[in-house]
Length: 214
Picture 1 (cartoon, helix red, strand yellow):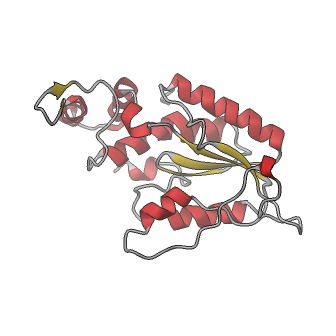
Picture 2: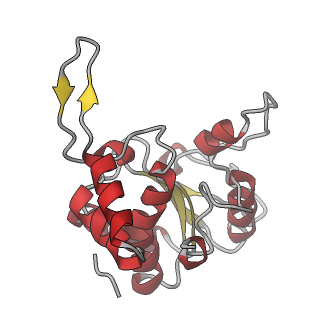
């Protein structure tokens, strides 16, 4: 069992956790923090460096055959419609049954533990490759965003330039409204129910309610 090793604020594809839990936690924290970084990792599942991922797998694999089969599965070529086999040199297959677990393992070391150690004053909620990081000031948010971008580059990934935003979440009464993971909530609504979503605006648009293994 590796799930107990994951950070408590990692909510994606974990037993007993959901996107609504992440939203609820974000809502509570937005009453105490005026700024958030709404971040998205560009092409995350397609671009995970397999060498770093396998290092994380080997850290916890109890049997050699586990690493062997995971490595074979990662490197299995993709067959195109014309029958051509294309080698897979990075990433995990989207839709693969073990991809979410491997993605969580990678970001446990690449993001969660790093952020908790580097910026312990900035709590976060992460659902797969979507995350919200809470900051006290705009200056702190800018600093943390830049540090996250550098960290991800060092791990072979990058922030999505359009989907990653710094957001000011404060209403006219001096207290913050709830924040929601729109894309994640849409994923969670697979039973056909429409879930209420509050989308923050960008600060510049005016008011909002507006790998190091241990």
